[in-house]
Image (cartoon, rainbow, N blue to C red; front, side, top):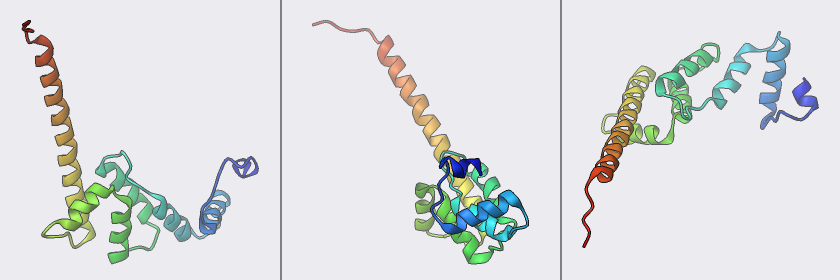
Length: 135
C-alpha cells in the first residue's frame, strides 16, 4: 500500500490493480491473480528454461490450457525464437512440443553466440600478435 500512496507503482489495467490488492490482502480470486501474472511474464534475457520454470509456476492456477496456454507461451518468449518456431516446416503442436523446441532453439542460439565471441577473440588476438610490415 505504501507503494500506491507514494505513487511508486503503476498499473496499466484495472485487473492488474485488483489482482495486486487481492494478492496483498488475501481472500481473492487466485485464478485472476495468476492470469494477470501470466499476461505480464516475458522471457527477456533469461534462458528459455528459466522462463519456462516461471511460466509453469504461474500457469498452475490460471485455468489456461490447450491453445490459450500455447498462445500465452508464444507471447512471452523472445520474438526471434517465436519467429523461428512459427516459420518452421513442422510447427510444434502441443505445449510440451513448444517447450522442447523452444529450449533447443534457445540453447543453439546461445551456443552460437558463445562461438562467435570465441572466434572474435581469437581473430583479435591473432591480429595483435601478427608482425607489422613497414613499407
